[in-house]
Image (cartoon, rainbow, N blue to C red; front, side, top):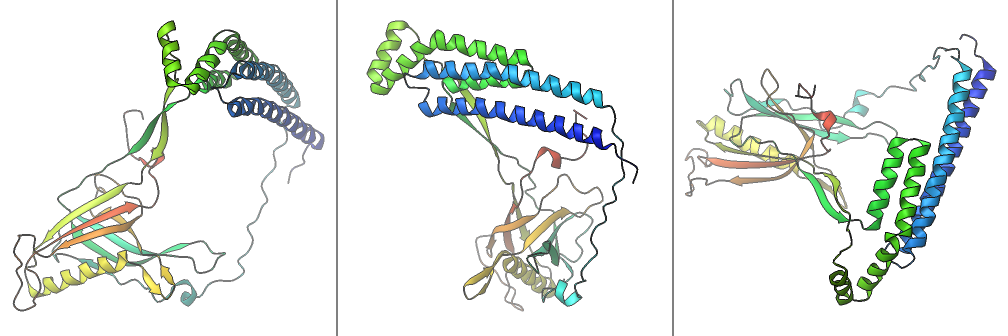
Length: 361
C-alpha cells in the first residue's frame, strides 16, 4: 500500500467533523423551534410569538451555516489532494459448502408444460418458485418448481396507480414554503431572507391570523361573521401531497376448449397446478407461504411490457362459460372452461424499473 499523509488525513477528518457538528446543531435548533411552533398549534393566539421565534432561529441558521461552510471549504482547499491508496480488503473464505440435499428440499423442479401442445411462437410464461431461506444466516433463494406456458390472453393490459391527497397546511404551509426556498438556495443570504420574511408575517398578518383562528375554534358562526365583516378568508395553503404508488395487479382471462382426451387431461392438471401454487400448505398451527411466480412473454423481443415477481391473488374457473354445462363422455371433463387469474406484484414499480428509450433520453 502506498504511503498516506497522516497529518493531512487527520486534518481532513477534523474539518469534516467540525462542519457536520455545526450543521447538525443548527438544523437541530431550527427543528426544535419549528416543533415548538407546531405543538403550540398554528391556530392558537400564541402564533405570532411562535413565528417570531422560528424566524429568529432561521435567521441565525443563515449565519451559522454560512460561516461553517465557508470555513470547511477554505480548509479543504488548503489541503490539496491526499495520497490515494489501494483497497486491500479480501472477502472472508467460505466456512463450508452446502450439500445439494441442504440446498434443495423435497420441492424439486418439475419441468415445463404447454397448453395447447402446439402453443406457437407467442405465449405467456408462468414460472412458480418457492421462496426459501434454509438457515437464518443464509440469503433467501428462489427455487423454481414448475413452468407453465399458456397462450396470450385476450385482456392484455398494463396499469399504474399513484396516490395523492389534498392537505390544508395552514400557516405551516407558508413556513414550509419559506424554509424550502432557504434550503434550496443553500446560502447564508437565503436563510437570512427567510427569517426576515417570517418576522414580517409575525409582526403583521400573524396577529390577525391567530385571532381569526381563535374565533373559528370557538364557533363557526363567529368565524363566518369575521370573514363577512372583513371580506377576507384565511389562506388554507392547500397542497397536493404524493402518498405513494400501488402494487400493480395483472388479470388474465383464458377460454380453453380441449381437442382430445389427452389435451383435456393435461388442462385439468394445469388448472389444479394453479390452484395448488396459490394456496398455502398447513402443518398444524403453521401455514407455509404460497409460491411466488415470475411472469414473462415467450417471444423474441420480450413482449410489450414487463412484470415483477408476483403471487397469485385469486383465480376463478367457470366450467360452463356458454351457460350450459357440457362434458366429454369419455373423460367426464368439461368441453370448455374459462379461467381468470389475478396476480399482484410483491414489490413496487419505480422510475428506475422502466427500461428502454423514452423522449427524455
